[in-house]
Each structure stands twice: as structure tokens, then as C-alpha cells.
Image (cartoon, rainbow, N blue to C red; front, side):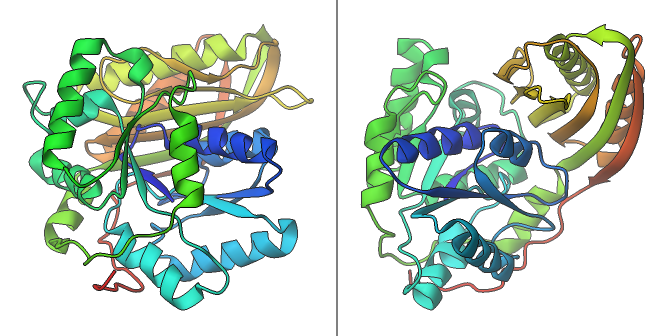
Length: 358
């Protein structure tokens, strides 16, 4: 598993790791995870040509049997050497509820790698109070810090996007607080540091320790403060448009409206699949004030396609849903038809298993 909070770069890391393994002759399959359907990450991974399963309706810890079933299905279909799994970005306590149950109950089928937890530098600085005012409330930051507490490898991502002084200050704070945990610094976009990290995961195994103490009431309240919106829509245009520019415009509109409501974005991901053999366009924004990040380029004009929008923010989900709907209506010269949508707060985490002795 590659864990970490919303917007840390887990999906990009999974794709990088899958490519790294393929070049070394390994067969790879991937499992994505979300509270609802129509996940942008699944679309991105499928477009990259990987075997992928999507587990919806809760995190791996609450859908443990679904995780095992998906793994068995992939094993039968693709015979992978390695299965890479990405848990929901707002979940923690993964070692006690997922890694250890897998190891103890299915150890003949799987060797469980050490749990990596990725961090976005600006999000980490805010949670550690290095950047002045925190971006999330204390309840949400509780989840963030618990993710770091249980990490066996902390992966500071996006080092290509920060200066040397900020990087050194953040490295020192993380090393001081989590002294016994290896800290690796990488850029999943540029490729820096990935060889060492990937080798540690593939060659290592789940460590031995007691499960961390965690207050599930606080954990549940933290998750419940986050609004979740997933939308699947079809778009049609009288004339051909640039899918990449269209997505960037839509993402900027959503971001601006969320920020105007004084809400903090966890992540905003959009993908547009034109069809007719054209590659999908994908963009993301992982925090307030960030520019639109292009994660995949279509590069060809199109007149129609399927659009997926995944928005996570600390705000009322009904408000977030209206922002997305209003942003879709604002697209000039574009006809949109919403096929499926969901807007909710995550329910209380209720793990299938929790094994205290890791």
C-alpha cells in the first residue's frame, strides 16, 4: 500500500512504480479505493494500460473482504507479481486493519510490503504548524498526523516544487518528530529519489510493532468534516474544443468558488475522455492557491467526451456539489449532461478486523 493524505501524489507514484516494475520484467496490477464510484484515479490507471480494480463504498479497512476478493480476481486474471494498492486519502490505522490482517490471514498468498506514507510539503508544513495558520481544522489534522505516526517509510514528495531552505526546514521537522522512521525525498513528477524508495518497498516487509493508539471518535469526526463530491457527466460541443484547456478552465472555476467560500480543498481531480481512440486529459489541484496541475494531456481537439470530477474539501458536500454544478453550467458553448453524482460526508470507519499486535 501507498498511503498518504488527499493530494499527496499517491496515484502518480503508483503509475511510476508500475512502470518501474514492468521495466524489470514484473507483472503488475493495481487497486484503487474510494468512498464512492466514478473515480478519476481508476480512469487514469486504466488509460495507462494497467489491470486495475476499484473498491468503492469505504476504505480498505472497512472493505477488507472486497480488497481480498479484488486481489484474488486480479491474481486469476493477470497473475501479477506485485499488486499496488492506494487507500482512501482520509484513512489511517491501515497497518492494524489492513496490512497485519493480510499478513496473518493470507500470508501464504501475499508478502506484505512496509507501509509508505506520502506527504505533500505544503500540507505537511501546515499540519506541523511550520507555515503559520493550519489549512484544515484540528480534527482533520488529527488524521493527517496519525497517518505519519504509523508510517514505516515517510516519503516527502514534490521536492521539485519547493526551494532548498523550505525543504531543509521541513526535513528537520519530520526527522525530529518521527525519528525512528526512514525519511525519503522524491519527486514523482521528475523522478528524483524513486529508485531507493521503490527498492525499499519491493525488497522490504511489514515491520513488527504494536498498533498505534487511536481515538476512533476523533478519527470519525475528522472524516465527517470533509465533503465528498463525485460527478460523471457527458459533454458535447457544436464545434471542436481543446479538452486540455476546457479541463483547466473548469478546474480553475471550481477552485475559485471553493476558496471564495473559505473552504480548504483536499484534492480536486478531473479527467475528460473524448473517445474515438483519443487519450484522456486529466488535471488536478491539491490545495487552495495552487495552479492547475496537468497530469495527462489529450493534445487533440474533440467535440464530445465523458467527464469525471472528484472534489474533496472541508465543507458542506451540498455546497460543493452546487459549486461543481454551477461550474459545469458556466462552460461557454458546452452542453453538459450529468449522468451520475454523489455528494456526502464519509461515514464512521468500522474496520472488518483490527489486530493490535503488529
